Length: 218
Image (tube, rainbow, N blue to C red):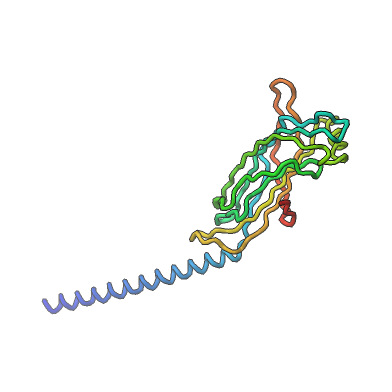
């Protein structure tokens, strides 16, 4: 019986050794295949985001004296900029995301809404809020812009454009940043009204931004 027990023990030991060896081999193969898949995915998928304007408000948009080009266009605007990452990987800004508010193809202001290194989680959306006031000389905007302002004032609706520019890349699940970078450019045309007197509210419907990666405004 003692010899039989020793034979069984050796058989079990050999089985466990083979099982352990096979497990190590399978684990190494799995790690290698996972690494290859992640590498291929980083090369195959281009960094990509979608942009929209969830909300935009004009608190003020007027001129001190609309009869001369030496007066100012004064504005106060708030914008909620939504950035959606539809990919399976993290998207990272390799350059700041800069927003420009433009009227009649003239920039009123430029401001960074997301810094270099900012990341968007896979399949998630993030909203950046922008609220700015200021004034710009009509001498800078030009007479054509002043004439457009007069016409739009009569209609009560102002054509304002939000422009977005930047550069993004993909960050893999292994936290490795790829060299696959892409210019980011969007045009978001808006039609905005000033709020009515009292406590009136102007309704705003979400606007999808048009991708224009070839137009980098900054």
